[in-house]
Image 1 (cartoon, rainbow, N blue to C red):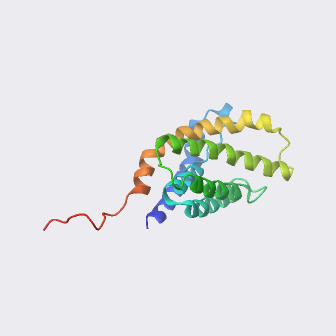
Image 2 (image 1 turned 120 degrees about the vertical axis):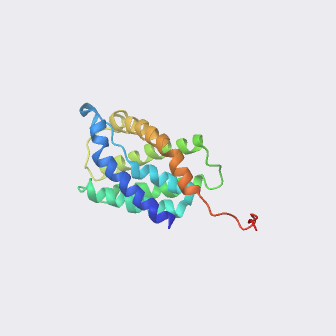
Image 3 (image 1 turned 60 degrees about the horizontal axis):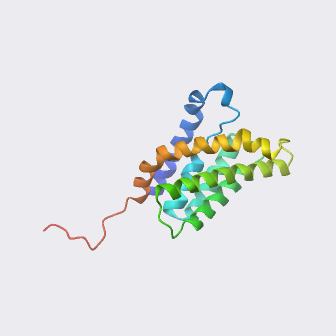
Length: 174
């Protein structure tokens, strides 16, 4: 039940990303800043719910983004978000989920996702930009914006995904 509500919340955040964030980002930076809130949620699901759920969450929302925004090449975001969701869930499986490790996962994952998408686009000749230019112009500014968004979402999402039922060992009032 909690994962179903997480999916609905991520769809709502996707709507915020497509309707509100373009108004907040200055027109000059629209080509540079490409926030990806469903990816941030994929990282949180991978960290707090496991690598398999992170994989499926990333695959579904990545394919949804490919369908909605990037129709010229289907599957780049689906592949990238699924792979990053699984790898982050695997890498942080036995580590404490503190703020610094979560921001590290979001930062490294964001750079890896944008790099994967760039190299897939380069492979299929969708882009002719050099990697250095894409890194400077799109990947690093997007990474910084996604870290700010992840920091704003950290406490509510952590509370939501870690909320657990009372354990059976607790005493009940008579």
